[in-house]
Image 1 (cartoon, rainbow, N blue to C red):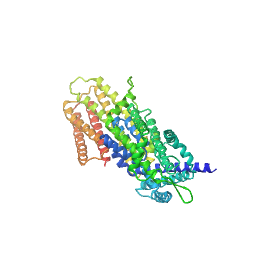
Image 2 (cartoon, rainbow, N blue to C red):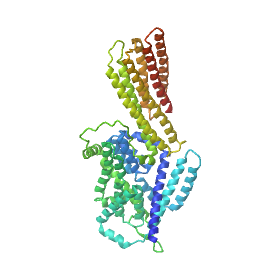
Image 3 (cartoon, rainbow, N blue to C red):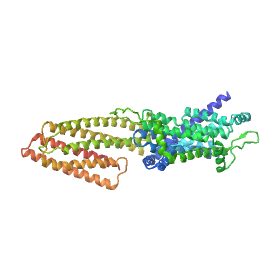
Image 4 (cartoon, rainbow, N blue to C red):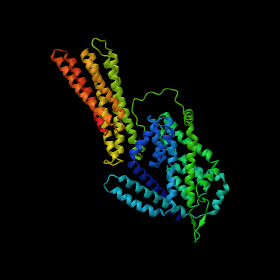
Length: 569
């Protein structure tokens, strides 16, 4: 019965630790969401900034698995190249060592329960009251549960009777004991799906002398490989580069284990020189009970960090060669794949629930892609329109082809709107509506609707051209001379909008947008007046009405551009 109680206590402590870690992650994401968005934008700079970005985002999210899923999804969407994703994953591997330091610095230095209970109380109050920084309360609540779980985990481990003979048996096994520990930790991490929780358990067991120092080191290496499976799962159904990115995370930790296990003794000696205290010290209380050794926690945290930093230093100068190796291992398919005409969102469903802030970033980049498609649609229309002139031979097939192409793009954008709106609405259930993220989701949904309406207008004006050609309604030279600059203004506005999406507009961009909107409205009135005068003068009524309708629809595109531009304040 005692054994069952101990197992349940340790299981409950582990579950509470993982739940607290998730609450901390959610609270940090909500309170630092804007900084995280900026950090993601830095990923495209260079390999060193990529490492720093991976470290910072993982420190915020407290999960290298979540970051690896995010990076693989970004590669699938074409937002990150293979080499950029590799550098970010290098940083994520270093960032995941932060929790080991927290457990070592706090877990063995003070009474954990005396710290956890007040944190839970304060966190619950801050989360319950109606104020704008409720995410801080969520973070403190998670912090409290994390260390309360650690307390029960440590207490359960501490009640296991110390068996000196068993430890001596493991010591006699030597290198074999390290390999056994490595395999056990790998399987354990696969089961609990968190290397952070696994490392915390390893530190607790080592501090209570349940496992040897060398075994703990081997277990840390096993946990590093076990946590890479999420990235592999996220790459299923993704692009070839996404699969390579996931493999890069696996190989990084496998290669780390390949050199670290043979060199384990020298690396441990290096850590022992850097970190004070004897990790092998065993002490007993006056009543003969074993006392936890806090020094081993610091040594294991430093060992964990040293492993990752040394491996990153080893890989970083050869990142391009590493990418070539991955390309060799996962080759492109020889047969050209058929172009997928249907839109797919790169994230897996579970990541929406786990990382709403990161998915908002992902959706925002997809919205920029939507804007780019509309720009292409309008440019295609402009090219055909400019080829039309009085008395010219119109290529009816090119106009029909334009309509077919724009209809396909319009259908594609309709799918984008449906899927992205669903994703954002699902994200909105994970954040507070009055929070910054909640407000951001609201106007992103408005922008999606506006861009989809713009695609409708682009297709509609292509049909007007088709109608004009089929009825031999040729625009007059004077009309064309005034129409072309008017069309160019909207084209310029679309380019400005595409560059502005995802960024806070500058004062110059705001002034430029307002100027373009005013010019478009002014020219629309002039063109409408020109069309009416031609009708009154006995001109071709059908041609002039088509001209007026065309001008009106183009002006609506400018209105949508200004509406979206104004929403980014």
